[in-house]
Amino acid sequence: MIHAPLRNDTFLRALLREPTEYTPVWLMRQAGRYLPEYRATRARAGSFLALAQNPELACEVTIQPLDRYALDAAILFSDILTVPDAMGLGLYFADGEGPRFARPLRDEASILALGAPDPNRELRYVMDAVRTIRGALAGRVPLIGFSGSPWTLAVYMIEGGGTDDFREVKTMLYRRPDLMLHLLNVLTEAVADYLNAQIEAGAQAVMIFDTWGGVLTSSQYLKYSLGPMQRVVERLHRERDEPVGAGVGLDAGGGPSGMQRVRVPSIVFTKGGGQWLEPLSACGADAVGLDWTTELSDARARIGSRCALQGNLDPMALMGEDAQIRAEVARVFESFGVPQVGTGHVFNLGHGISQHTRPEAVSALVDAVHAYGRKMRAPGA
Image (cartoon, rainbow, N blue to C red; front, side, top):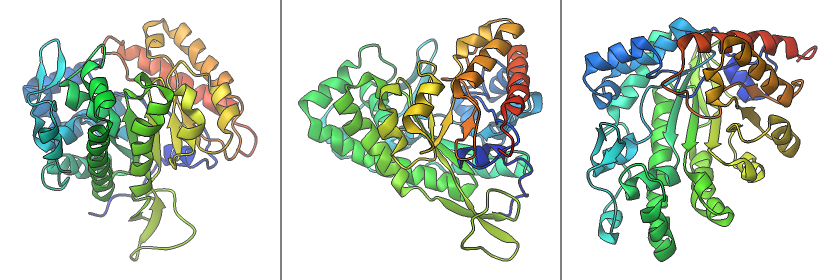
């Protein structure tokens, strides 16, 4: 499929630490329950899974926030648990309990029986959604694909859903580290295949969400969370053919007539991962996402221009009045400091937007980011 040229590549340029006119902004979970139009579409679908597995409806909710706000990227509407669901664990959503698996991994036999799914077969509905969204965006903004990290997927697969104490997964980690590493190796292959399939379908950037890396000890994080993420990043397809003007072009190489070879940037995000910024920034990804517990000034001082930074407003700041939201936006920018060529910044929340957020609060946020981001531009940057 030949897609329309990209009219706004600010997000991609920021990830690649190229000059931009302003600081781009998108929000984790920007398509979600805080929007009344999302709730109406979900009601029409009948359930969250039915919504996520319908490419046309997934496209509809992906684009809804772009119709309200001047966001600089769209993110595929899906769920991080699609991969384990495709591996046969039986994903379902219980009222008031969040995602659950009918068949969690609790023994050696069930883990050894797992294999990486074919994303173009078992997860074809996701690839169809990517293609549908790219067509509907018509070059408006870039589309982000994503996956959960191998470690985060393993947590859900072993626990059977959300957890407070991580008892099941940590018991396996301590008692059978060999089995844990085997599972993570399978998931590393699955996540890399899944993200590459999204790229081939049209995703213009990809993000790995490591929700639960922060619950590990430092040595465990490097081995069980960051290690698999780094292997995923190493396997990612870093380029794709797009129409001329549909992305950040490369100096070398080329594609078919009327096409250009473009970069596909990657982002890694570990919630609670501020203490591991140095190894995170060295994993090969183009950008590191930060939660609100790490100062951007500290992050920038520690990793320099090694990669771009994404973040990191506290999502609860959106519970404030508009003037307070604007003040918090200014504080984030002042923490990052004056941008220079080679230091990219993508404004985002430090985690997903709350379902209790006022839609008007997001308008105040996006407007403030664009206004303040232009003000902070250094001459020539």
